[in-house]
Length: 131
Image (cartoon, rainbow, N blue to C red):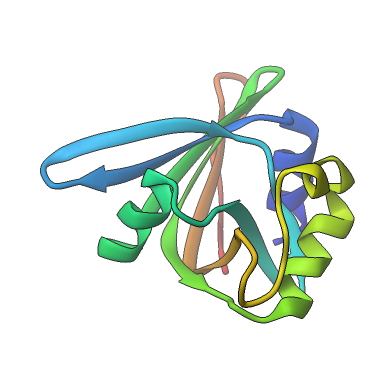
């Protein structure tokens, strides 16, 4: 999983796909964080993406770095613990201006469960990691 995390960090931006009814929804994200051995992402409570994840937590994300691209599929699991939220915001201090933690806060963090990631390139065979 460390390789997947490093890929996302180096790519900087990845694109998260969710579903709304029968319509796919894709948007750029930039948060990827390892906490307690799990790969986490973050968004804001009340956003459409948070509602879409609650309705169907199966996601895919995609990122590109140099001549390689990464695709990750899995199920997002909400982690409402303040410790998880604080750890994410500690890793991304610029988000503290927009997001607050705790029961009355507006930050939502999720870890990827049953993840499968594939790093592909035209110059080498695909590498698949399950986590």
